[in-house]
Amino acid sequence: MSVPAAAATSPRAIQATYLGLTASTTLATSMIWGINTIFLLDAGLTNLEAFAANAFYTLGMLLFEIPTGVVADLRGRRLSFLLGSAVLAASTALYVLLWVWESPFWAWAAASVLLGFGYTFFSGAMEAWVVDALRSAGYRGELDGVFGRAQAATGVAMLAGSVLGGVLAQLVGLWLPFALRSALLLASLVAAAVWMHDLGFSPVRQRVGPAMRGLLRVSVDVGLRDGRLRWLMLAGPFIGGSMGYVFYAAQPYLLELYGDEEAFALAGIVAALVAAAQIVGGMLAAPLRRVVRRRTTLMLAALAISTAALIVAGLTTSFWIAVAALAAWGLALSTLTPVRRAYLNACIPSQQRATVLSFDSLLSSVGGLVQPAFGRAADLQGYGITIVASSALQALAIPFVALTRHRRDPVDLGEGEAEAQPAAA
Image 1 (cartoon, rainbow, N blue to C red):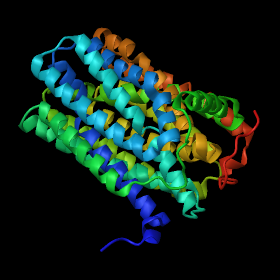
Image 2 (tube, one colour):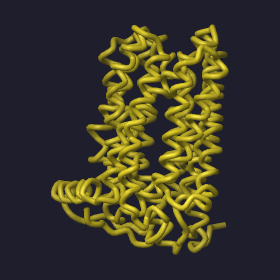
Image 3 (tube, one colour):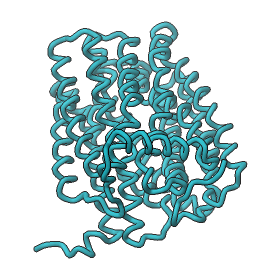
Image 4 (cartoon, rainbow, N blue to C red):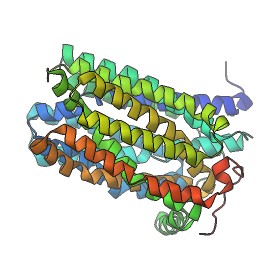
């Protein structure tokens, strides 16, 4: 029995597809999140090399973020998602082969760039797809709730994936979560091919080169010359750099505090606790927006709380205090993320949406380039001091969010979101 077209394109059906694909891809990718750093160290890399490999992943995102975002805006967000699933599945399988072959660092660096390339097809495309599809279906609600539910779905999937990945690594081997991740990404590709269709968006029928240059130029103008977006986007490198390092450094750091550096299942459970905080944070976004008038107020509070939590996590010698502090960090940032996404999407015109969101992701990725330096510092001084340093990095985002608040734009109150148009600086 076929599904009626009206039902398939209703706001409820669109959100269900968005949440389902968000959860399925997160379940796949989170299989390794609890053990990724441990996997790299087990492959024979030093802390410096392991975090340098993560930096090459960031380099891949920097190199390809804008071009793949332009692909989504020119040829379709569905195509971008399908390409991302395929590339990530292949590059994850390559990671397993490198582990088996005990490959040198340069091979890990190349594979990490390929991983970053795959992720860039995702960033911006899914958000752009759901915003345009909802508006084409007549949805007029605020986006905070949509992105909050997606954040919660991400947390549930991350919790399940992190625990399962850690347990499988403990029982079978560190390679299995990576192999399973690759298979699950292929399953997400099939699901997207069936249920994800571009709505409220028409591909651009012109030569790719000139269209890409024009769209890139306009998108950068929208991203940095639009006063509503500029400061919030410039906060991204500090938030992204801190978040990326802490998430992966927390794995070996907590095992070190626990006293058993081979308790891989525990690493997965700890990652799942952060995921649980993410669920709660995502579900809190919409209710808090009904209480707190300005989005920037929530963002500033979340940054202050998460920064303080990182200081506690880095200075303590207690495993359980560190776990609680990292959970508070995850909860605060998970409240910030959907609110920030809603603010950005409310300001971006449809035709540049995926590219501008990719540009925002690129700026956030720039912060990831600190990972080799933090990894070297962890070799010399220990993980605790680098987590404290990451709190200082994140704190640098606060003045930029404050400048966004100073504008007192109607979007900050959730007003004027129906038709986003670029604003003057």
